[in-house]
Image 1 (cartoon, one colour):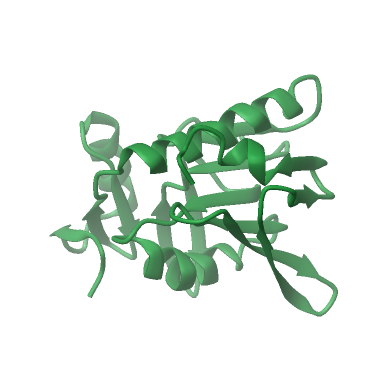
Image 2: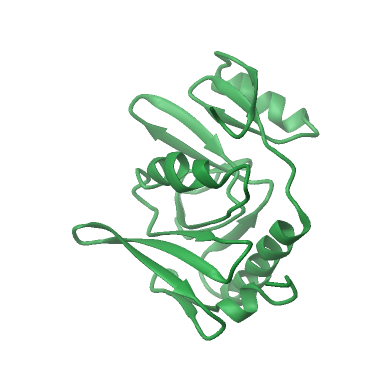
Length: 189
């Protein structure tokens, strides 16, 4: 069973995008089905905000854009279309010109919560990893200072777990060096 409440079935991509522009509540779209996103808590928002702020500072005057919270990523895989709202993501691809979603993210961050952790760890990770542009997928634990990082390598996807105040998330493209102490500052973790 999904962490989201099922709203409707067999909605076209066009109907979804039009409805989402008017909706006060965010929904994700999975192959014709729409799911309302659960509310997030204070720590989830603080972590997402810290990542957004740090990345925005790093990306200033460099190529690439940083998006959060209300910008979707579109995934087309196995003949299906999906739209997800990552907590934060970076896109450096000049082909990424849509106003309401990204087709070419290079780095995606998802903050884990009890309602969405399994979805983020499995379904979304697998879907995101089909994107040719994606180089790094990061899961941020909100209850302990830990990041689970998947990086595209020569032989597929490599994983790494970063823990502790002295750990630094480094990404080669786009160039990012983000200390966990900065991500988790003021969160009580």
